[in-house]
Length: 343
View 1 (cartoon, rainbow, N blue to C red):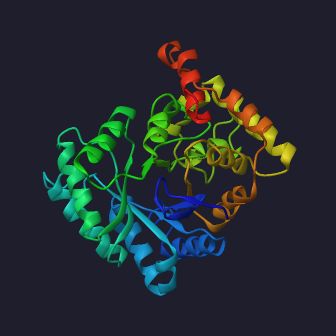
View 2: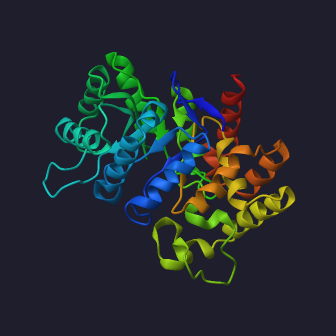
């Protein structure tokens, strides 16, 4: 397993993190503990969760696993999130000091730990003043309840505003951004990735397999069935069958992933994960698995290094559709210069 800095910090994390949204829902406690055992045995040291995953059950499952394996608490970097509703009260959501204090204390209790390594605000809050949120996070760092903080699902301007507001006030700085990112979803490259690079934030991509589309299990003109995300619910969220299957770009990407995987004799999922892991600013790619077999398949990406030619082939096939101005030629030139260190 490769280890990388967690953004612009001194903490090292494995290039592949373990996401736990399935814990307590699609994976019961025994299966979840087996997944964590498998992940730890492979050298993984970064577990990502949130207070809303199965209404807190995911954090409780992780907490009981850590209690059984106290040495793993010292080795594991634990990340959680707060923002979304965890109760029925009018103040049981958002990024206010009041809600975040309550949410953080509840997460600490469920995880059975006195600190969380990376605490992330799960989404932008248009109601709470940003100063209030950042000051709370700074106080949580100073008070030892969290080691670092980060953002999730922020836009480029929201991210940049938060980074510079913290800097202007002398508060602790953010170290990460957790966005949706994959060969299927590359829109963040226009502004969010450059903003993260400029701020020294590490990216923690979620849904790197596009909800299962990049595993190679779906085929043209064959609606999915069986024990897959879309087989169980074809209308599921952002990866819905009707929405994606009608886009030629989807199948062009899938075909290219299958081609590279076939040439390498590896699983398509491993190719898709390796492409994401090799993108600029990525600290760790979040893996979601319902079984140890799925996790084992995904962890095969840890030993896969794609060539420049393969990266270019996949990138060309998945090039996102963006407005020509200012994200076309001018934007590409700016991003190229930023990555090369030139002006």
